[in-house]
Length: 569
Image 1 (cartoon, rainbow, N blue to C red):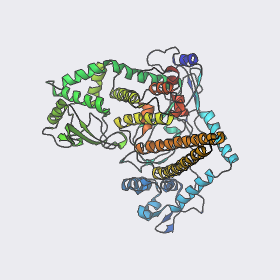
Image 2 (image 1 turned 180 degrees about the vertical axis):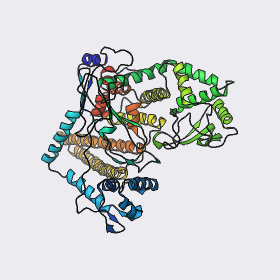
Image 3 (image 1 turned 90 degrees about the horizontal axis):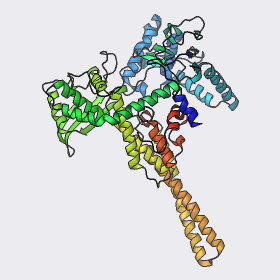
Image 4 (image 1 turned 135 degrees about the vertical axis):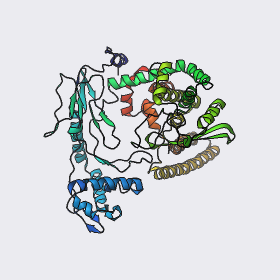
């Protein structure tokens, strides 16, 4: 791809403030197909007897049946939420009969969907090709829009199918019914002079808007958390690329003033105003620990998740000394997506003293920073630097950490596998900083077992090759002819290749083990300036596709074309 051509795409004429586009035309969302009833011979059983369900009740039963082999359906909160929502959708006759989830037998329905899935996997090549062509046709029709004369790819052009809400971590709403999105729920956004998308036959849109200060094409409210969902442009689109680029440029600007900001909040630790002291300690946590600010939310609306500003006294414990360190703060709370944040951190003495002061005469459920709100903190951040938010600190600290870790860990003498292990270790340092966790994948134990078998087999091959080299060398000593000498070289080359393969497998096992509970993708896609990774790849001769897959390379096309090997965040 020509550099100047791509660069000019990001540098096209700027629009007046707030205006994102002049022309936007699209087909609207693609709605997931309506429910198809189960075959007559696939039955639901209640208390050991077959029971014919109404269509709406049956559809919801299939959501639960499909998840029978999943850990979620063993959790009491999931079961209770599901049963409560399912009963609301039943007919009055069904409500009279179905009163206990324990007596419900979904196994036949579960087996039907497992078999259906296996049959789909076993389809002949021609059938699979036909399905792919159908999917491509839908993508072609609904997956693109016209934005200011450019044909741009749309990200998620399909509405989410109905199902059971899972949530992350121990979410209190897991198991609740996610309702089907209908055209009557959807707001369309396009340009006034464009061809307005047609709703499906017999339906109408909730509203049609012509708002060129936003970048979404369609939106609706989902029923579980009452949050807005959007159809947006694909990450590879010009608008998204520009937004990404600007996000990292703001974080780079923080680099120039961060020392001044740190000096300021350190001074504020001794302020006569308690409110300023609280703000300064919170800012220290946001900076040092990459904590989220924590937005206010309606009581009982979502899980009991908190951020820095909404921490309660019960979320921290103070230790004058712990594990050989002084002034230790022990954090334990549920963060975004109900992911537990647990950390023991040695802090500076004034921070520790201030925390003791903030906790004095308070109950465990009282706010730690009772004089502080997210709005007050953000206003202060804006005053320190235009565009500065707590998230900018996360982006800045994540990117700086990656850059520093790559410099410290990369050995120019390593082969590609060794350098990639260093990259993942640097990325992992960021994921730990940002508390990006995941549960151990279900396939982890099996895949490690398979990998270990490969390592054991390779070790055996190496041992055999070592014996072969020794034999060849003995033969050469006896005969000293050219043929025997060539055989020694041949056996040594084979041994070297096998040893390299073994080293590569060992690196793979180390990487897998170290990453089993860390989600590397979140920080890589959202908090790390991609130019750091691109520059590292170019400097050390690592193919970019070893770091970013095809979709990610499209998303970061701007970075791949802008960053040279000497780029510094």
